[in-house]
Length: 196
Image: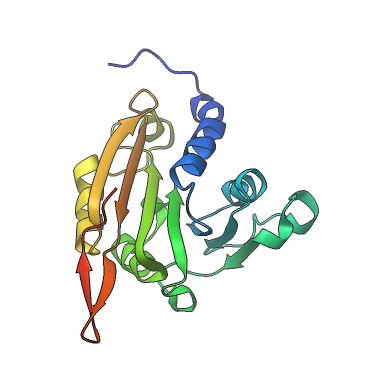
């Protein structure tokens, strides 16, 4: 059992998680943030790493006036849209990130399938979630995934190189995976595992 954590534990670790996400996605130029909420991660990645970030959320009510508050507003776009339909992004993204949002999505498997299609060959998805039996579950009485369930969802969406782990005193589930990297052979696309 982990020692008692302060009630503001998640607020305190959020900046560290943003920094870690930025490091993980260091080579991605075009990033899609699904379930972006108030676009805090979108702003951080644009301001700190100069990424081109598109935030998507089914409710745009918490979107800020990012043109006034972000240093690199030309790199930011926040769109009110359901993540089960990402056709306008197909094949355009280097990375997709979902932070503290997958458990709230009604159709998580469809969202991950759409994320796969939005990624370029060899693209990466990063999921940062509250795990089952975490302090978050006790605080907010919501249902979260365990590592095996996240891995299964990613596998069913055709992702490869799936890695899951618990970080931040086992209070955060960190999962990453990649798409197939395609090569052309006699006019057809084939796939191979991405080396990392």
